[in-house]
Image 1 (tube, rainbow, N blue to C red):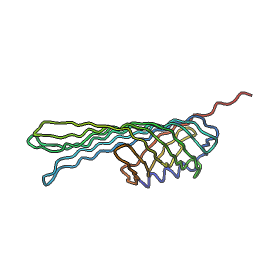
Image 2: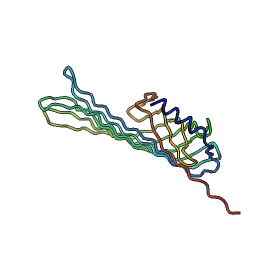
Image 3: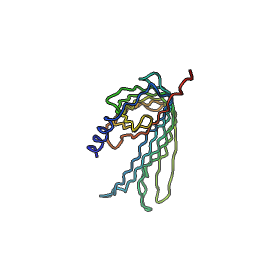
Image 4: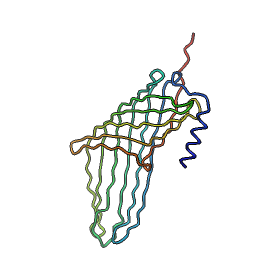
Length: 209
């Protein structure tokens, strides 16, 4: 799979260059979906983990190197355990996260259609957690939430299919979160957390002479 992706990048690099200086508005949506099902063994419970993440972005080009815009984030996680009716145990949790903030992005050509685009963004968000517990078949849910401020960087390799449509892949990400209860810095290199993206660039309107 990785070799196929490298060949795909090589073919694209032979095509004509896509420039930012004739672009105006642009959009991008990063997304990720993962699931893990772990059968129980030696007394442990069956586990079902699901995660969906999306980061829509919209902005405008600034010259031929910079882009500025607004970023949104939404994440949903469900981590559940299959607790038997005659057992009392933790049943896992659910998490919902959504927020938005400003975004700044840089455009660095590597070849005709392949670009390195580091970006930095800030966001203000709301997180909600729901802890699940079972007591002999009876489910109890306890929910709590808090507001979170943070920042992050998702540098991406972007490949243009034509002058307006592009795909991106983000193999490393870094985010910082802070709220009243905690602070955290997360740097991810895990292939299971890679983000795929679809981008579209709108051409500038030509000025009438």
